[in-house]
Image (tube, rainbow, N blue to C red):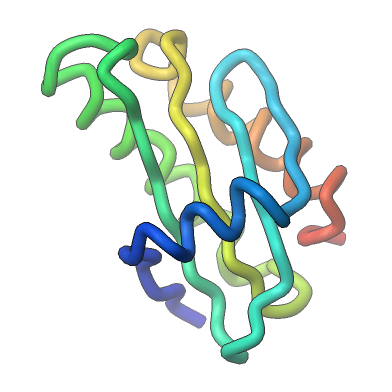
Length: 110
């Protein structure tokens, strides 16, 4: 099932304040059960990461890593991934590994 994109600021803020969180060296994950019956995903990268090229690379890596796991989620969730400074410099496999660990820890993957 293809996930939708989180766009509204209020949705991001709701996840930051009420969602469960898990952090690693590459990404921070905020997750919450969805009330809409569909999975929605948002990806953010702040200016600390670097110039636009690095920020876009970080977002691309996270998006590609999540595409591996979006069909194996158990349930519908609102998820926000926050890129960290290291994200733009690491390989795809490391981002995938950390994402899988976080999603399992938060109960979204079995």
